[in-house]
Length: 421
Ligand SMILES: *Cc1c(COP(=O)(O)O)cnc(C)c1O
Ligand SMILES: [Zn+2]
Image 1 (cartoon, helix red, strand yellow):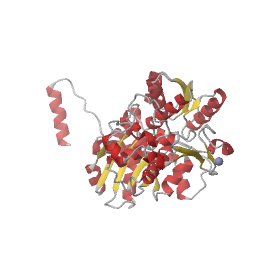
Image 2 (cartoon, rainbow, N blue to C red; image 1 turned 30 degrees about the vertical axis):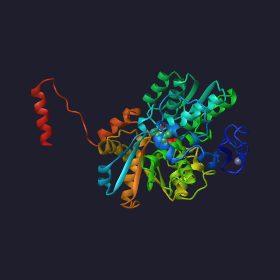
Image 3 (tube, protein in one colour; image 1 turned 90 degrees about the vertical axis):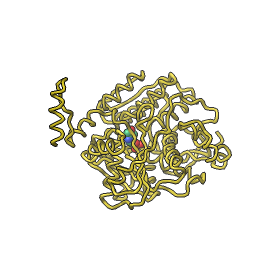
C-alpha cells in the first residue's frame, strides 16, 4: 500500500512501516497509539473532488484512496456510511442560531457510528487471513463488528460489560458472535479482551489500540464536508467516550486540508457526560492525559461511559488544535435532549447521540457560539438501541400515551381531555 508512509507513535514520534508493528508502539505498551501517515501526493493522483461528483458509491468506500486498504481490497457488502445530514431550521430557531445540521449515524447498518470503524477492521483482518476478530465494547462497537463479520462469515469473539443495554446484546447474539458478558465495567472488558487477543493471536479491533479504527471514523468528516459542498462547518458537536470518534473527525479534517478540499479547520466540540468526564477535566485543568488517573464512570449514556478514555491523546489534540472545547452535560440534560432532537428534527437518538445536542444547548446558553456560525451535530447512535432510556426521557418531560377503549365514545372523551390541556 504505497499511499501509506508510516505509522507514527503519538508519544515518542517514532515511525514504523505498517508491516513492522501490529497495533501499538512497542516502546510504550498499550498506550503507544499510532497514527497512520499518508502520502497525499500519491493519493491526489487517485482521487479528486471532481471524481467524487461522478462516484456512484454512496458508502465510506467512495473515499477508498484515503483509507488504509489496498485499491483492490474486497469490502464487506453492508452499506456503511453516507448517512443523511439534515438541515434543522427549528432547532436552529429555538437556539437563536442561523444554521444547524444534524448528521444521523443512527442510520448505519447496525444503527451506530461504529460501523465505520468495524468495516475497516474486517478488511484489515481478512488482509492478514485472521481466523478470529475480537473487540471489547460498551455495546455498539461490538454490534458493529458482529454485523460486519456476519456479512462476510467471519468468526468473532466479543467482550461487553454485563450492564450493556439488552438491545445491543440481542444484536450480537442474532448476528452469531461468541459473546462474553464480563462481570465488570467496560474498562475491565477492554483489559480482558487485550489479554485474550495476545494469548490466542486473535485480530484485535479495539478502539485506540488498532490504529486503523480512527481511519474508518474519519469518513464522517469527509461526508460532512462533501454533503455541505466542501464548505466546512464552523463547529462539529460530538459526544466523547474513548475519544476515537472525535480523533477520527480531526484526522479526516486534516486529510481534507492536506488534499486542499476544504480551506478551514472546523472547531471540534467534545461532549462528555458529567459522570464520565475524564477528557473534560483534563482539558479544562490542562492535565497530562498520560498520567491522569482513571475516573469512576457512571452515566445513563452507556456508549460514552469510559473511566480511562483509550484514545485520550488524539481526543485532547482534536479539541486543542482546532480551538474547540470540551463540555460536560448531566444525565438529565442528556435525557431531555432525546425528545428535543426527536421533535426538533425527527432524529431518534440513544443517550450518547443525544448528548451531542445537549452539548450544543449548553454551549449556546453559555454564550460560546456566535449566531452566524454553521453548526453540525453528529448523532452517533439510534434511539432503539436503548429503549429504557428513551422511555425515561419521555416520562421526564411528562409525555404519556392516552388509554382508550376500542370505541369512539372513549376516544371522544380522551380527545376532549387533550383539547382542554
Ligand atoms: C462509541 C460511541 C460514542 C463515543 O465514541 P468514542 O470514540 O468512544 O469517543 C458516542 N456515541 C455512540 C452512540 C457510540 O457508540
Ligand atoms: Zn512510542
